[in-house]
Image 1 (spheres, rainbow, N blue to C red):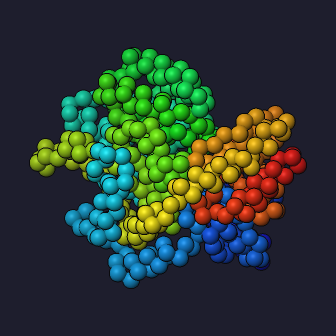
Image 2: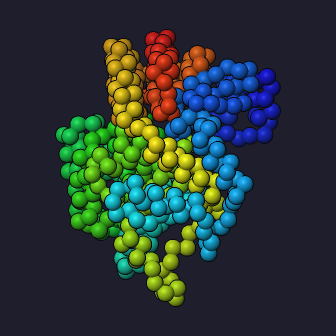
Length: 430
Ligand SMILES: *Cc1c(COP(=O)(O)O)cnc(C)c1O
């Protein structure tokens, strides 16, 4: 049954982030239904979704509360344009996001996916400076960063695999070294390098964009919050905006509701998507300050308005799933429960450190990564772990030689055991 559906798929669908020829040997897995942490295929095999379906799912698949709220919305208002019109779910969501994000982020601009939110933040930052009579055509980002794959987002990213081909098309950006590890001393070294770049080019730069604490697609690289705090202070001296790309880190993933909280800062822009709707529907927001908002607020004839839009901006169904997700946060102690789960996961992965092919084990909140060593990219070691996982009922999707766990928060301790034991056996079988 699975293979028949896969065959039909391959006749028509060009899949994301895939060398399609791989599917000559690598089976595509059609999913029929999902519940909680489990995905079920058409032969009723089940897989623990250890990567939260590309980092979006928080409260499990087909969560009964979120589903109910989306169904209610479905029969009331499915969509309306957000220019000149508005609706309750968008207003309520914006209000609640302002309440829970760092103090000072008071305005919400809607988009419909993560990359679009990045484009919005970059354009807004550049445009803000322009409205103030300054030309700042350059963006700064961290080495090894990832911010999405549209042209602007790709330009500020630094993962060669995705970026190199398109170099001639990209907008101007430079990179400053990300701290090497989670220590304070490496954060201080990186801050010195940031200082030198800002001394030289600070007045050309519109914004410094970072993934706070954890660089997701950049192999789950992690660094200390002190870097963010010091970087924010430096940026302020040069009038440079700090964009906190919390598309992956937001909504509890790093242990606090937002990663920026751990650095005790309010960024000038915060981008959110992925977990925002609990993994249900595409939606993104860019949060910013009244000060930035006010630089665009004037008579139409001054031509300072932000004329950016997407057709599905602020879609009511997506907003209703986001509201339901926020309800679940409010009505549970999920962050506290996650703290205990993270500790448990860390204890469980201790034994990985003794394996000869393991270089490092690292964790931040509900993200735990195992870095392997001694393999060349041609060996495609991640693919082998992926296959092993699927054969044993766990969806692990390594990033190259990094195996990581990023499950929905509702995963049980038993399921954690299964997820980690399977990865362990995959690694020792290499
Ligand atoms: C996933 C991601 C994006 C891009 O979001 P899409 O919805 O996939 O376009 C941007 N930044 C970070 C940090 C991400 O993890």
